[in-house]
Amino acid sequence: MSEPGSLIRSLSGRQSARNFHSYVISEIGVGIASGRLPVGSILPNDAEMMDTYGVSRTVLREALKTLEAKGLVEARAKVGTRVLPKSRWNLFDRQVLSWIHEAGPDAAFLRSFVEVREALEIPAAREAAEKRNADDVRMLHYWLKQRRAVTALPEPFALAEFELHRTICEASHNPFLRAATGVVEFGNAQSTVRRLEAGVTDLAAEKETLYQALVDAVERGSATEAASVMADVLKIDRDWILGV
Image (tube, rainbow, N blue to C red; front, side):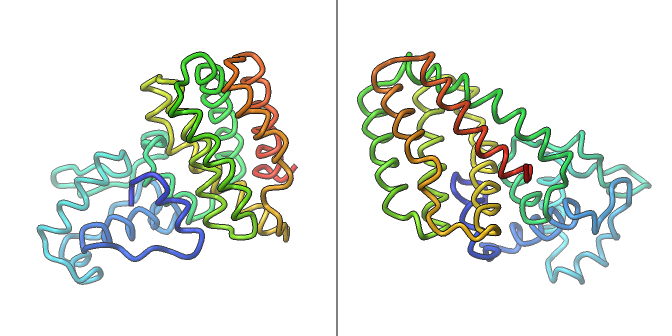
């Protein structure tokens, strides 16, 4: 569940794992993100986890290697597999962010998150206005239209809004910004959830004028305006995400 849009698709309920490998990764990942498997703790031994998850030793070992690559655990000889502190987690990994989203991030995490999101997406809008091509502009208009069309449908709406933001990152033609779309998607998922919790039914209305201005600024090549409007968009999301 690491392709773009997979985190947002979980808004309609937890997705079923495609295979035993992804099932074990997700179960342990959510357990760590939620604190059910606390930082510093040693995971149960292989035999116990094989029994818990109903998988072979090979599947379990591959799952633990994947989690180790994402920075969640560390295997040590004669010690076992230890849960690492959040400072070691790859927080740009979409799958790690999906586990945090499912577990429910705390206030301190969200404050740090919105700061990083703004540091990435405001420059992305500026660069998009400077470097966009005709295909980028066409896709921005497409996702702007889609966002309006599905305003009462939470999951399609969040996907359309995410794709609009992702297209901005793509239009920047900056490989680092293009690689940060997991952060972008997490932001769209969090802001949509907060609106739903508050009973908002027309999800598009609040930022409609701003998104139109953003797309227009990128199309015209107005970098300063694009960055300014993106800052306004993210300020609204920040308030929702932090509960201001």
